[in-house]
Length: 225
View: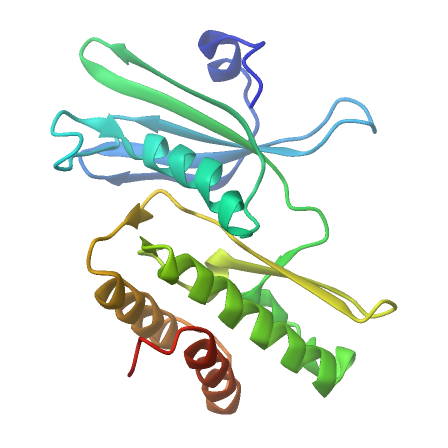
Protein backbone atom coordinates (compact mmCIF):
# COMPACT_ATOMS: atom_id res chain seq x y z
CA UNK A 1 0.00 0.00 0.00
CA UNK A 2 1.41 3.38 -1.02
CA UNK A 3 1.78 6.05 1.63
CA UNK A 4 3.71 8.58 -0.47
CA UNK A 5 0.73 10.86 -0.95
CA UNK A 6 -0.81 12.49 2.10
CA UNK A 7 -4.42 12.24 3.18
CA UNK A 8 -5.11 15.78 1.99
CA UNK A 9 -3.50 15.04 -1.37
CA UNK A 10 -5.72 12.01 -1.95
CA UNK A 11 -8.80 13.79 -0.62
CA UNK A 12 -8.23 16.64 -3.07
CA UNK A 13 -7.81 14.23 -6.00
CA UNK A 14 -11.23 14.42 -7.58
CA UNK A 15 -12.70 12.03 -10.15
CA UNK A 16 -16.11 11.21 -11.62
CA UNK A 17 -18.71 9.56 -9.44
CA UNK A 18 -19.42 5.92 -10.32
CA UNK A 19 -21.37 5.44 -7.12
CA UNK A 20 -23.05 8.62 -5.96
CA UNK A 21 -22.70 9.32 -2.22
CA UNK A 22 -25.29 7.38 -0.25
CA UNK A 23 -26.51 8.75 3.03
CA UNK A 24 -26.35 5.82 5.43
CA UNK A 25 -25.22 5.22 9.00
CA UNK A 26 -25.67 8.94 9.64
CA UNK A 27 -23.00 9.81 7.05
CA UNK A 28 -22.10 9.69 3.38
CA UNK A 29 -20.14 7.20 1.28
CA UNK A 30 -19.50 7.19 -2.48
CA UNK A 31 -16.98 6.02 -5.07
CA UNK A 32 -15.14 7.99 -7.74
CA UNK A 33 -13.08 6.71 -10.66
CA UNK A 34 -9.61 8.22 -11.09
CA UNK A 35 -8.43 7.88 -14.67
CA UNK A 36 -4.64 7.59 -15.18
CA UNK A 37 -2.70 10.52 -16.59
CA UNK A 38 -0.43 8.19 -18.57
CA UNK A 39 -0.79 4.76 -20.21
CA UNK A 40 1.62 3.11 -17.76
CA UNK A 41 -0.57 3.97 -14.77
CA UNK A 42 -3.60 2.08 -13.47
CA UNK A 43 -7.19 3.20 -13.25
CA UNK A 44 -8.08 3.73 -9.60
CA UNK A 45 -11.26 3.80 -7.56
CA UNK A 46 -11.54 6.16 -4.60
CA UNK A 47 -14.10 5.49 -1.87
CA UNK A 48 -14.79 8.73 0.00
CA UNK A 49 -16.63 8.79 3.31
CA UNK A 50 -17.81 11.43 5.77
CA UNK A 51 -19.26 10.21 9.06
CA UNK A 52 -19.95 6.75 7.59
CA UNK A 53 -19.00 4.77 10.69
CA UNK A 54 -19.40 1.46 12.47
CA UNK A 55 -18.95 0.23 16.04
CA UNK A 56 -18.07 -3.24 17.30
CA UNK A 57 -16.90 -5.00 20.45
CA UNK A 58 -13.33 -4.59 19.26
CA UNK A 59 -13.87 -0.99 18.18
CA UNK A 60 -16.50 0.45 20.53
CA UNK A 61 -15.54 3.94 19.40
CA UNK A 62 -16.71 4.90 15.92
CA UNK A 63 -14.47 3.94 12.99
CA UNK A 64 -15.06 4.56 9.26
CA UNK A 65 -16.50 1.51 7.47
CA UNK A 66 -13.63 1.97 4.99
CA UNK A 67 -11.30 0.86 7.80
CA UNK A 68 -13.08 -2.50 7.93
CA UNK A 69 -12.77 -2.79 4.15
CA UNK A 70 -9.05 -1.99 4.38
CA UNK A 71 -8.60 -4.89 6.81
CA UNK A 72 -10.38 -7.30 4.46
CA UNK A 73 -8.36 -6.11 1.46
CA UNK A 74 -5.15 -6.81 3.37
CA UNK A 75 -6.11 -10.21 4.78
CA UNK A 76 -8.18 -11.99 2.15
CA UNK A 77 -5.27 -12.34 -0.34
CA UNK A 78 -3.57 -14.45 2.35
CA UNK A 79 -6.43 -16.94 1.83
CA UNK A 80 -5.87 -16.99 -1.93
CA UNK A 81 -8.88 -14.77 -2.55
CA UNK A 82 -8.60 -12.09 -5.23
CA UNK A 83 -9.56 -8.56 -4.19
CA UNK A 84 -8.69 -5.14 -5.62
CA UNK A 85 -5.15 -4.06 -4.78
CA UNK A 86 -5.09 -1.53 -1.95
CA UNK A 87 -3.24 1.64 -2.92
CA UNK A 88 -4.05 3.95 -0.03
CA UNK A 89 -6.16 4.20 3.10
CA UNK A 90 -6.36 7.20 5.37
CA UNK A 91 -8.78 8.72 7.87
CA UNK A 92 -8.85 11.98 9.78
CA UNK A 93 -11.31 13.56 12.15
CA UNK A 94 -12.54 17.00 11.20
CA UNK A 95 -14.77 18.83 13.65
CA UNK A 96 -15.28 15.48 15.39
CA UNK A 97 -16.43 13.69 12.22
CA UNK A 98 -14.43 10.93 10.51
CA UNK A 99 -13.36 11.63 6.93
CA UNK A 100 -11.95 8.52 5.26
CA UNK A 101 -10.61 7.63 1.84
CA UNK A 102 -9.76 4.20 0.43
CA UNK A 103 -8.08 3.89 -2.98
CA UNK A 104 -7.83 0.64 -4.93
CA UNK A 105 -6.68 -0.44 -8.37
CA UNK A 106 -9.25 -1.43 -10.95
CA UNK A 107 -9.59 -5.15 -11.65
CA UNK A 108 -8.55 -5.13 -15.30
CA UNK A 109 -10.49 -7.50 -17.53
CA UNK A 110 -13.04 -8.39 -14.85
CA UNK A 111 -16.80 -7.84 -15.00
CA UNK A 112 -19.42 -8.41 -12.36
CA UNK A 113 -21.24 -11.73 -12.22
CA UNK A 114 -24.36 -9.62 -12.71
CA UNK A 115 -23.08 -8.39 -16.09
CA UNK A 116 -21.84 -11.90 -16.95
CA UNK A 117 -25.45 -13.01 -17.13
CA UNK A 118 -26.91 -9.75 -18.45
CA UNK A 119 -24.56 -9.92 -21.44
CA UNK A 120 -25.33 -13.63 -21.92
CA UNK A 121 -21.64 -14.51 -21.83
CA UNK A 122 -22.18 -18.14 -20.72
CA UNK A 123 -23.50 -18.96 -24.19
CA UNK A 124 -20.43 -17.32 -25.75
CA UNK A 125 -17.73 -19.14 -23.79
CA UNK A 126 -19.30 -22.58 -23.75
CA UNK A 127 -20.67 -24.86 -21.06
CA UNK A 128 -17.35 -26.33 -19.93
CA UNK A 129 -15.72 -22.97 -19.22
CA UNK A 130 -18.88 -21.61 -17.62
CA UNK A 131 -19.03 -24.61 -15.27
CA UNK A 132 -15.37 -24.08 -14.42
CA UNK A 133 -16.19 -20.50 -13.44
CA UNK A 134 -19.10 -21.52 -11.21
CA UNK A 135 -16.82 -23.98 -9.42
CA UNK A 136 -14.17 -21.26 -8.98
CA UNK A 137 -16.72 -18.93 -7.39
CA UNK A 138 -17.93 -21.70 -5.08
CA UNK A 139 -14.36 -22.54 -4.05
CA UNK A 140 -13.57 -18.88 -3.36
CA UNK A 141 -16.62 -18.48 -1.12
CA UNK A 142 -15.84 -21.73 0.69
CA UNK A 143 -12.30 -20.53 1.45
CA UNK A 144 -13.71 -17.27 2.76
CA UNK A 145 -16.15 -19.00 5.10
CA UNK A 146 -13.82 -21.75 6.29
CA UNK A 147 -11.44 -19.02 7.43
CA UNK A 148 -14.23 -17.49 9.51
CA UNK A 149 -15.00 -14.52 7.26
CA UNK A 150 -18.42 -13.25 6.22
CA UNK A 151 -18.79 -10.95 3.23
CA UNK A 152 -22.11 -9.68 4.59
CA UNK A 153 -23.16 -8.14 1.28
CA UNK A 154 -22.86 -11.21 -0.93
CA UNK A 155 -24.57 -10.05 -4.12
CA UNK A 156 -23.80 -11.03 -7.71
CA UNK A 157 -22.68 -7.47 -8.48
CA UNK A 158 -19.97 -7.80 -5.79
CA UNK A 159 -18.50 -10.97 -7.33
CA UNK A 160 -16.27 -10.18 -10.31
CA UNK A 161 -15.15 -12.69 -12.93
CA UNK A 162 -12.66 -12.95 -15.78
CA UNK A 163 -12.42 -15.67 -18.41
CA UNK A 164 -9.63 -16.35 -20.90
CA UNK A 165 -11.17 -18.44 -23.67
CA UNK A 166 -7.84 -19.05 -25.43
CA UNK A 167 -6.21 -20.49 -22.30
CA UNK A 168 -9.46 -21.93 -20.91
CA UNK A 169 -8.76 -20.19 -17.59
CA UNK A 170 -11.03 -18.41 -15.13
CA UNK A 171 -10.56 -15.96 -12.27
CA UNK A 172 -12.95 -14.50 -9.72
CA UNK A 173 -12.71 -11.79 -7.08
CA UNK A 174 -14.68 -10.14 -4.28
CA UNK A 175 -15.49 -6.44 -4.06
CA UNK A 176 -17.34 -4.06 -1.75
CA UNK A 177 -15.95 -5.45 1.50
CA UNK A 178 -16.85 -2.65 3.91
CA UNK A 179 -19.29 -4.94 5.73
CA UNK A 180 -16.94 -7.95 5.74
CA UNK A 181 -15.84 -9.23 9.13
CA UNK A 182 -14.60 -12.25 11.06
CA UNK A 183 -17.34 -14.26 12.75
CA UNK A 184 -17.01 -16.73 15.62
CA UNK A 185 -20.10 -18.57 14.38
CA UNK A 186 -18.55 -19.60 11.06
CA UNK A 187 -21.38 -21.87 9.95
CA UNK A 188 -23.96 -19.17 10.58
CA UNK A 189 -21.88 -16.65 8.64
CA UNK A 190 -21.57 -19.06 5.70
CA UNK A 191 -25.30 -19.77 5.64
CA UNK A 192 -26.08 -16.07 5.80
CA UNK A 193 -23.81 -15.24 2.84
CA UNK A 194 -25.05 -18.10 0.69
CA UNK A 195 -28.72 -17.37 1.39
CA UNK A 196 -28.01 -13.74 0.58
CA UNK A 197 -26.39 -14.68 -2.73
CA UNK A 198 -29.34 -16.91 -3.59
CA UNK A 199 -31.69 -13.95 -3.14
CA UNK A 200 -29.42 -11.48 -4.94
CA UNK A 201 -27.96 -13.60 -7.75
CA UNK A 202 -29.52 -11.51 -10.50
CA UNK A 203 -30.18 -13.43 -13.73
CA UNK A 204 -28.36 -16.58 -12.64
CA UNK A 205 -30.75 -19.46 -13.47
CA UNK A 206 -31.73 -22.03 -10.85
CA UNK A 207 -29.70 -24.72 -12.62
CA UNK A 208 -26.50 -22.65 -12.27
CA UNK A 209 -27.28 -21.86 -8.66
CA UNK A 210 -27.71 -25.55 -7.87
CA UNK A 211 -24.38 -26.36 -9.54
CA UNK A 212 -22.60 -23.59 -7.60
CA UNK A 213 -24.17 -24.67 -4.31
CA UNK A 214 -23.35 -28.33 -4.93
CA UNK A 215 -19.68 -27.55 -5.49
CA UNK A 216 -19.65 -25.19 -2.51
CA UNK A 217 -20.83 -28.00 -0.25
CA UNK A 218 -18.12 -30.30 -1.63
CA UNK A 219 -15.57 -27.66 -0.59
CA UNK A 220 -17.22 -26.85 2.74
CA UNK A 221 -19.03 -29.98 3.84
CA UNK A 222 -19.57 -28.70 7.39
CA UNK A 223 -22.26 -26.32 6.13
CA UNK A 224 -25.60 -27.80 5.19
CA UNK A 225 -28.62 -26.02 3.74
